[in-house]
Amino acid sequence: MKRSLILIIAMFCTSCLVQMSTPTEPQVEIAAMESTEDPTIATPDCQPGSGVTFRLQKISDNMVELIATGLQPAEATRVFYSSTYNGRNDGLSGMFDANLVNENGEFYSELSRLDPVEEKVSMTWDIRLQHSHGVECATIILP
Image (cartoon, rainbow, N blue to C red; front, top):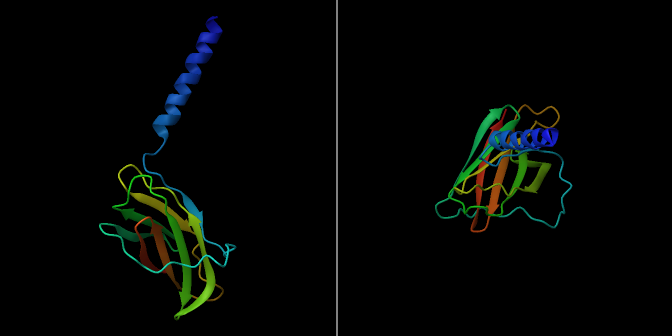
């Protein structure tokens, strides 16, 4: 009986520690790669939503953080990304569902492996956040 009680208390304490260490901001890191998505899904045009801000923050030479505010809590979102070099699309693009809007209407995610293709020194990345009332757009040149 005593062992059972100790085991139950230990399991309870472990679950409390796990909950305490869980970050309050939903965040996920996605690695960019050659798109294998359905080619019939087109990248949406930019249509900024009222009261929504969207920006990219460079984390490293091949990683950015996507930050949006003014969204609805738990709103469904989708991220589209593509790269260009000297105004030409080089074919590195993709999309992913990123339902990461927290209870304050904030979205945080990281996109990694945004590497230049072949011998190119830098690439321009077009990143779009689609949500229920618009499409936010931002670009960044890496590295």
